[in-house]
Amino acid sequence: MRRTPLALLSAALLLLPVAAHAQQRPQQQQNRPPQTQPAPRLAPISLSGRYLAARVGEQDHDYDAAADQLDQALLQTPGDPDLVYGAFRLRLYAGRFDSAIELAPAVLRARPGDGFANLALAVQQIRKGEYKAAEQQLARIGTENQLGVLREYVMAWLKAGEKDFGAARAFLARLKPAAGERAEAPALVIEAQIDEMAGDKAAAEAKYRRAASLDRNGLRTTVAVAEGLRRLGKDADARELLRVYGTKYSDSVVMDGLMGPNAPMPKPPSPASGIAEILFDIGGILGSDPRAQRNDLALIFYQLATTLKPDQDFGWLMIAGLYEQFQQIPKAIAALGRIGPTSPLYWQARLRTAALDAQQDKFDQAVSRLKALVAEKPERIDAALTLADLLRGKEKWADAVAAYDTAISRLKNPEDRHWQIYFGRGIALERTKNWPKAEADMKKALELSPEQPYVLNYLGYSWIDQGLHLEEGMKMLERATELRPDDGAITDSVGWAYYRLGQFEKAVEWLERAIEQKGDDATITEHLGDAYWHVGRKREARFQWDRSLQQKPDKDRVPIIKDKLENGLNAGNDKPTVYEKAADSKQGG
Image 1 (tube, one colour):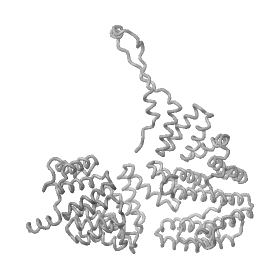
Image 2 (tube, helix red, strand yellow; image 1 turned 45 degrees about the horizontal axis):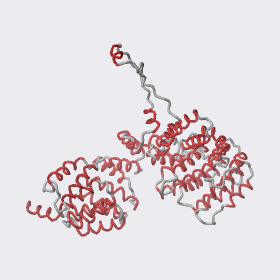
Image 3 (spheres, rainbow, N blue to C red; image 1 turned 90 degrees about the vertical axis):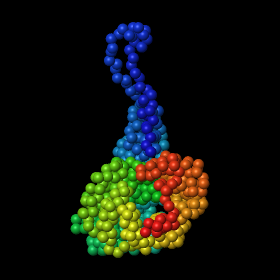
Image 4 (tube, helix red, strand yellow; image 1 turned 90 degrees about the horizontal axis):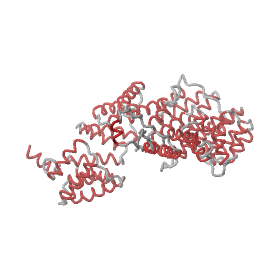
């Protein structure tokens, strides 16, 4: 949830209404002709107000707004070292590299060993080809710097830039991983690229091929090797490497961009491009923190990588992903916009942009973009699948089924990873009241990937709810809870299944557990209220129904819950057990 910048609140408190002759007696004021009052004037925002607004912007990951606030604060107090450092850091976060560099010398006067200030100046020097100066700049970084062991690779590239290839290889030798391990592949790629710079084509080719054999699953290793082989005149080998990878991982669109007839010749290796890849890798390490506590730092490294290598499109893709996590959707779309039509990642960028449009409430525009992408590449399933998931999320069930149909029709050989497609279509079919086809899709999803808890949950519950395959359905639900014991939605399904089977005491036990796991879910809360009613805990039942109304249930549930509150459970608002339902069906027949 976005917060109101505190600076605006403080500014609102500083409004100064102008009231002329405020000390006049009431009679004098009454006799005066009415005058137009001047508009209230907004007092300048104080230094503390700017600082607080910047802090709020930073906490919201709105780094542009935060940087703007500290820039204004600097105008008020230009020499404050803490403000200078804060403004420098926020400019880096916001990707304003050139303006950040302007503050770096002032930062270093107060903090000589600061890692980011020295690194930023080194990046600037590398851009200019001043490799010796960059080497000296990096030597000033304190021992706590963020480069870690990758610093040696950076130094190797700088030595290569100085044409001191012996020193470059010496730096690489210090960090060489154990021979034959996959981790050796990135180091071999760097060695090969430096050999290319040195003019040793035979050594470069041998190392490229060795790297490819060690890391057959890595996209960036595959791309780097293929680009190197192309530069060395081994075009056919490069194309075959890309073709095999694309077939194996369904990344043909990326591979086509790299080896298609219009694919440009890769640029020769350079210290700038090599160090950009290292900065990207550091960003990846920081961004992989499962607690997401270092994503801000990851963003800086991705920004520095794209500063050194503006066509580092993997970097732009990662920047967009971080901004999406930060709920800064316009900035995510802007980052994707840096990926141009000649990039192998252009397809992914457009696909992601369409999905982000929907997050900005531009649903029709998102659908239009996705339909165009579906038509553009009739052999691919990803655009159709993205469209289907988007339509399902908006509960446009029939349209979602049609989009899933398109995706599935393009599947030549369904694999275990495709279970989600059948599961998604199964949900949409069930919502359109086409249970036979929905059931078939659920079974297909389990055939492809038998231990998927959400499929087990959905199919098992649906069977029990319809009075079908009761024993098998309950086994599925029990297995789902074993796989996801802390998932409130799955726990709720077990409780509601017991409810439908008329085992209300067991239902209460499971539904109370579900509430502990997911206490803000209107459906679970309503279910618990129903179960309480059946075991005689009617006051608690009404309490839960009232809570359910406060939790924003689906619109069609609101009148039903209100009826329960007013009249209790009755035939009009309660679901019969599966046995009662079966008995009613027989009587009706």
